[in-house]
Image (cartoon, helix red, strand yellow):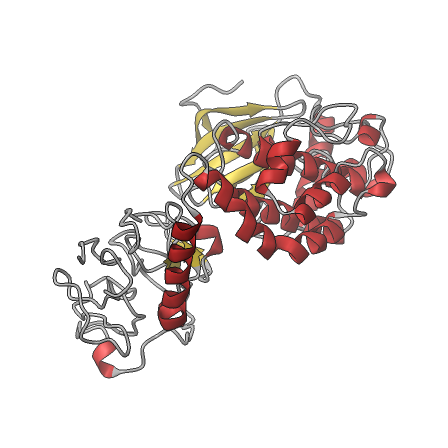
Length: 440
């Protein structure tokens, strides 16, 4: 075992992350690149040739899988006589995250990410054979999951007859008998998803309904519950044939599930009268009709369900702070700022929403219809080489200068916040979403 502080090539070992049957995983620091990484290393007790064969198979499989929800391999080589696989270092695992309640909207996002990763692998006829929360690594402040550890998948590449490898509690019955298939991964996915939403992990003999079924029915759309039941069928032929068909089925009811599921947990213990609920909903709908497209209020406040936009720093309905955007996985931008969890474009050098990190920007310039075309909405820094801004940006994404312009709501230019000067919808809002000042 490698000790903390010891060196392995250019890597400094910072601690042990996990132990497996074929390898140990360490947290390490790349002393040349200045980045933190995870190192997967065969323990000393493993026969060298076996370790090389197993690691080599894992590297070859992972090299073929280029997907945002599959953990990439940065490097694989012999270092000081050891075979080492180098991977990005995550923030923890889904297993760690499951020790606390997961918001329904976040669990739905995780579900889609897990399905997307496995569907991509299954399209290439790769079975994972060890899908479990420990192998789902968290990144981007918990917004993104990446599937790791294709070490057992090598058995699936050559034959449908496996060794029964996998993690007890998350393997399908037929896989435990040494007969894995793509449908075995489907079963593991369903187990994880069921646990995320109910807090219960179904156990052998997997009789339906399992513990937690009543909670699933309260939280989820009936089509979602039926989808889980099919995924947890004991007979493989009754399940989805692969994660590809499982993902397609999920996408058919995904929007319904998102509308239905988040409400019950939020309103439990604080139910309102029917007239009160209707009044708030009518108010939200009227606002959406007037301002929804202009402000891109595509999200619901996690506290009051009022419509909010990614650019807002407070909920205008209940005034709760939104220092971190609550739905980074649903951003319409390709990247997410690690500091405020809001979207970032590939060619931005800085976050436009917070005075946070600088980024390694793409040299290619990307057009976007959201950039304001008028000259008065440009960065006023003479030294800025791009200047283009989007409404309600706080900082220029090219030079990081604070935006001095006061953003107005089109058609309501006279309605402004008395504190920050930006446009507000006084008819609807309780506070300014840009500075959190009370409006009434």
